[in-house]
Image 1 (cartoon, rainbow, N blue to C red):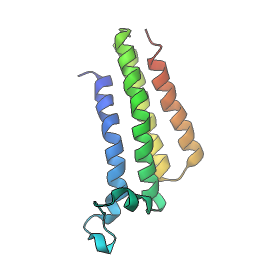
Image 2: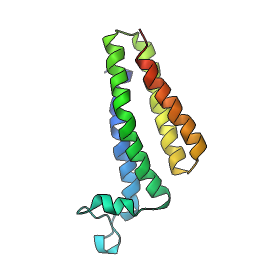
Image 3: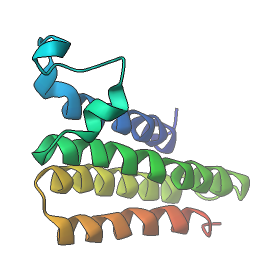
Length: 130
């Protein structure tokens, strides 16, 4: 497996990690005591606040970023781009996403947006490597 493929797997797992963070406050608690409501999970998640609400938002954003990253890797592969370049861009995307999630949890909006742009730039660059 290439580094880029490993990065794709990591990118696929990031939304689930964010979801676990969002739900972590409810672990071990019954639904009636504020624990996670698996019967109405979206309603329960919508009522979160603070860093857990931001973790849920980071989950949604991670799902939204995944298709362009996967498509960029596909196009780079189709162009038979140099693997080292593809790997470097994929690592840059993952680094940007990890920092983005950390800054989202910390409520650092401006820096978070900067990292979002960096991650998208890595994705877009994948379309043009040759």
